[in-house]
Image (cartoon, rainbow, N blue to C red; front, side, top):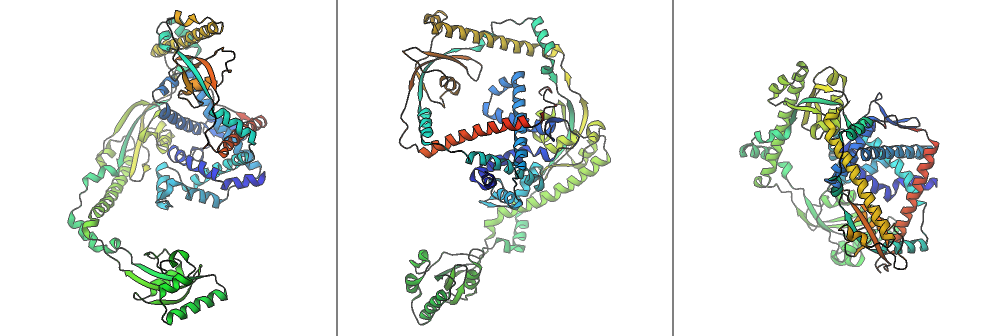
Length: 630
């Protein structure tokens, strides 16, 4: 078990997971390594605290992902305070689970070396250019996210430690043939259903919510109707992108630069050679190579000898000829010998490389060529623009920093100094902000005592290279319960929704009960009707219908099974299951695929059991769980 745990850090499974989490780190930030020590605590796992800031950051990240997946229905869900509270709890539970796993992995003596962390980072596509790790891209990406390389490496180390533990759980499970066969049968099963939809709007439009009911609900659930702490913000934003259009580079300037830097626009020398290889470094290999060299010096045709005697079978069939290559491609010893030959037709002596002994014949030389000005003119102009943008930007940045510091009570002087405008907001909640004000460093500045409480300008904050901002808080107000008059309409809409859902559910229950008693006319009496037959699989086409259909008992003796589901808009659907169809799996389905599914299922069960055990033995508290959702 311990060996599997330690090997887990190098498994393909772990690397795949790491490649998937990279974007969430880069764009959501690594809050756990930036939080200050005096923050409020959202949860505590044994002696480890999860800060409120970390939680809100993870919550907003998950919230944004859900919004992208669900679209307009997301607003409906988030309008339900109970759902929001459950959602927030699920995010915090996942963070607690991660911490429990990390602590358990540490107890087991697991660890991730610096070399493993480095290799994982090198293999991440986000840091690669043309499939190769690029240090400049790496540093640029982290700078834009506001993360230092040390912080990022430590976050990766912690995730690799957790995944090492999880990988061992997965690798310890295996599937028996009968389990695989059973899964294949269940996966391929189809169910024939009919559906009857009860539109939620038909019920909510008919319900009545009195003023007394609304006020009573408000009084009992005031924490659902809070206004979060808010601030009014002013800021000045500087971006290099906005300077580009003001910078013009003439053709003469570009050509002058070209003439002064021609080496930048030259192609490297390339060579083409033929070679004969004798593999190995033994005395016998060397003797064979010397014999071939003597044969060539005696007048033998190089191509004929290569075809007959070279151990490089790929080039031997072409007389030993290789493709054109430049420096930095071949084995160093081979390259040095090839580039030391003076002219085509020259032949080397024996050349020892890591592959064995070579004899090299120079076939051709492609001299370095300078690209014509017309070919590189556009790139030169862009490069010169970049240089001038950088120069102007950093001059403006310095002036902004100086003036904002000298006049700390207002941004007007700083705006005048850099010819920029001051952007102002109304009262806003920082957790819901996007764009510049969503940046973690900006939010930290807005909550700092100097800016939030004392009304000072912030320091210059770098959002990304050549993109900075200075912020100030013009006014602030604490979290407060909104007056009933401000939320009365919202309360009544919420209660109407709840009443409508209850009535729709009761109506569906009554219809299902009557149908089970054989009263088939109950549907027509209400002017309703079932759809035609629909064949559903476990994946759809309607996931909500399929999920319920596959939980219903198989119809017996022609007796239909009934169930109830809700669609993504809250409408109730009555499901009639008429038939279960066992479909033979297609011939191209491979058992190993299903074996993997079974093993993954077992691994999930093992993980759930492990987490339950860890929670029972750990001290887990949620100091801020009841804080009203924002």
